[in-house]
Length: 571
Image 1 (tube, rainbow, N blue to C red):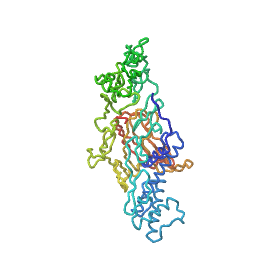
Image 2: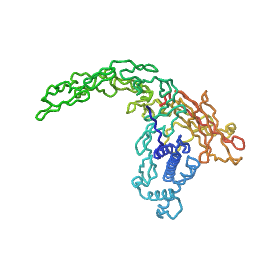
Image 3: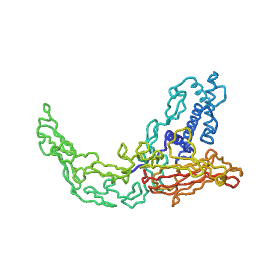
Image 4: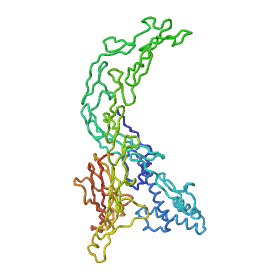
């Protein structure tokens, strides 16, 4: 029988998921499928707190490096720019106060808790270097490690856990996607959590005698080993496809028992009633045997005819344990004792039991006393436990074949060498001060003064981005895969305000994607979703148009080109 965990997630687990979403700069208002209202609140607040800490750190770094806090220096828009600029201004206030000898006391000013903390930290650190990490005056989030630098500090992200795990109290723990509601099992499936992932089991769709495996295939149930043996005493259960048969056997009683009644059960023999089995000593009957208790002045070894070690004859195929008047056969791990003779150990085929719990993500090979999991021949290696497959990041390990002029992008089971070029009348935009090795590129319109066609073209910006996805065989609900941000404020009551519309220009032949319009923090955003299952490997290019409309006219347009690489495997 299989039991499923139904307890709600702890608040600490909800917070850790929120912090990870904030660290990845994802939308905090888009929650996983969490039924608990308290968990939803904790998830969003921990995500927003992490997002604000990272934005404030950017502002402090800008103040220390450039001494300028103008909005054009920040890449973000909306509230993100306001948060970074506020921390930049407050840090500049602290450093200026220190350089003029005005002290670092700002409690009389109504600056707010965050601004006063940043100003005092920058003021105290401007005269001589202070290890903010040691005195715990940094603003690094719990998902980051504080590293002291000359006159400042930096927050370095802690190593990520492998997929399916989350960093909780500095330990990578398995994420129960079934409990948190972050799985993609449809209403016809039951979610079963496994280490580092989950499985979707079909609900009662197979014929009697069959069960469903993780990919929705009905397989035979071995009734003889699943705990539902239908055979009576004196019969041996033999599994068949979709059922089983019961074969009648003659009951063989072990040493110390006699066959009685209708020949279906054994009864203990009282050896003490057979005669003087212990000589002058006392005889005590036991189930299947007897024992002799010596009179004073005797030891058990002095009565040489009492005990025989049946295990010396090696009656068992594996392990033998001698007991009074008899013996017991035991099997090593991965084997079970045969019901036919009680002496032979039979191998357990763990791979055949995968209908209830899949033991390998790719392929399972049964072996005597155990099993082996194999991974695809390229792009994966077995994990430390030998039961899961781990993707090889060829880009990180340097085992790729990309040239210096190409971007290396890791995908599940391989890598891609990518190059992007801007079309005519467009130039490549410079990247920000942060190191960025991601394979993305932005192309900005760059017209010559006399080029009228270029000047009249509404397209102002073309952005290339890359995305790696597993094979989703079940798309009973849309899977959100990309977020498109704009700086346009939502003003539903103002007919003269600028509005934004999103449109998919190109996609696959089966129309497996769509784009919907939403809002976040009062700004218009677009969400790209996968609405149909796609079996990999597939390479798909999506082109999404972001149209800015004022008074019914498209004033300008931005194009986002998403290069999607879909792996042939689900894990």
